[in-house]
Amino acid sequence: MNHSVSALEFQGKQVDAKEFLRPILFGLEEEDLEGLAQAAVQRYYESGEVIIREGDEGDAVYFIVDGSVEVVKEYDDGTERFLHTSGPGEPFGEMALLQEGGRTATVRAVEPLTVLEIERDPFLGVLGRSPSLSVRILVRLTGRLKDSDQQAIEDLSQANEELRKALRRLERLDRTKTDFIQVSAHELRTPVAALLGYAQMMQQNGKVQADPQLQMLAEGVVTSTKRLHRVFNSILDVSRLMTGGLQVIRNPLNVSTIFEAIQSEFGEALERRRLTLELVGLDQLPPCSGDPDLIYKVFYHLVNNAIKYTPDGGQISVIGRTSEAEDLVECIEVVVEDTGIGIAPQDIHLIFEKFYRTGEVALHSSGTTKFKGGGAGLGLAIAHGIVVAHGGEIWAESPGYDEETCPGSKFVVRLPRFVSPE
Image 1 (cartoon, rainbow, N blue to C red):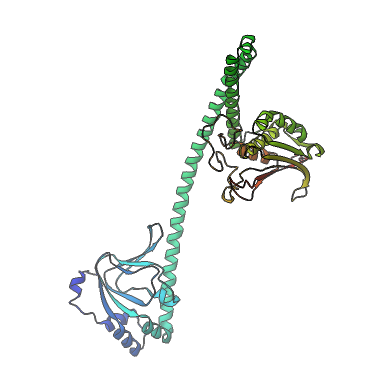
Image 2 (image 1 turned 180 degrees about the vertical axis):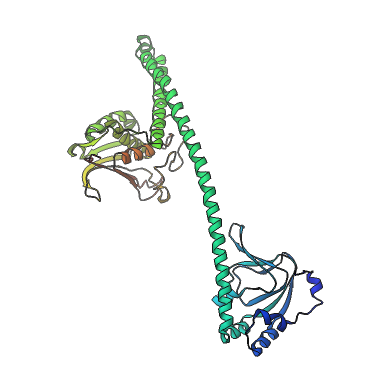
C-alpha cells in the first residue's frame, strides 16, 4: 500500500531517478535510461496546485513518484468535466509532446505530489531510439482515450435521459397550457359574442342614433368588443394549430373574391392612414382548392401586418400569379408587398413564431391598424399554420429594417391548385 506524505517532507528526500524509472521504462538501453535520469528534475506540488494548464505549450513529461493527480477538461463557462486520475508510476503530459501542440487538459494535484519532470528533447530523443517504449506509450494513450470515450458516452447517455424526462414534463405542461387556453378562449368568446350582438342592437336603437354622445359610446363598445372577439378567435386558431385540430374543408376558392372582402374590411383604416392598397392580377388567377374561411384569415393577417408596419401615406401591393413548386405542382402565388419599415435579417425566420413582433411596437394600443400598433402577435403564426395545412408555402423577404428609409417587406404565399386524394 502506497503511503503519501507531505511535499515538505519530500523536500528532504532525493529520489533515485534512474532506479525509479527503470521498471516504468523497462527495456531501455542503459545509456538511454541514464540520459533520462540525468535530465529528470524532481518537483513538489501542494494539494490543489495546477501542474499543467490546458492550452499551455507541451514542453515536458511528468512521472508521478508519490501522490496522485486528476485530469479535467475546462470549459469557457467555468465548468469542468472529469477525465481520469493517475497515481504513482504513471506518466502524464506525454500526449502534447507527441502531437506537438498545446496541452489538451488541465492536471492538478489531488494530494501532496512529487514528480520527475523530463523536458521534451531528451524524452523524444530516447523515444525515437526505442520502438518498444513508443509502442507501450501508444498503448497507454489508446487505453486512456478508450476510457475517456466510454466516460463521454456514459455522460451523454445520462444527459439524453435527463433531456427526455424534461421533454416529457414540458410536453405535459404544454398540453395542459394549450387545453387551458383553448377552453378559456372558447368560454370567453361565447359571452363576448352575445355582448357584441347586444351592443350592435343598442347602436341601431333610435334614441341612441338621435344622441351623438350615446352614438359615440355605443360605437366604442362595438369596436372594442369586435377586437376582443378577434383576439379570442386568434387564440382558438393557434390552439387548434398547436394540437393538430385545424380542419381544412376544401371547396373551390377564388382569391379575387377574398380580397374584395379584405379591401372592404380595411377600407376605413386605409383611408384614415392614407394608405393605398393595389390589387394586381388577382382577377386573372384560376380557382384553387382550399378552405375559403381559413384562406381569408391568411390574407387578412398579412394585409393587417402590412398596414401595421407601413407609415401613413405608404402603399401596399397584392400581386397574383401562377407558378410551379419544386415538385412541378401547379400553384397560385400571392405576394403581399409594402413600403414599410422592413424586417431585420435576424428576424426574418422568427416572425412566424407565436407572439413574435419585429421592432418596438406598442404593447397597449387602441387599434391594430395604427402604425406599429399593438396586437397579440399571433397573426403571422396563424397564417403560416393555415398555409402549411393546405400543403402550401409561405415566406418573407426584406432588404432589412429601417424606420427612416422604409425598405419594405414582401410576403409570398404559394398554394397548390389541386390536392391529390390521399
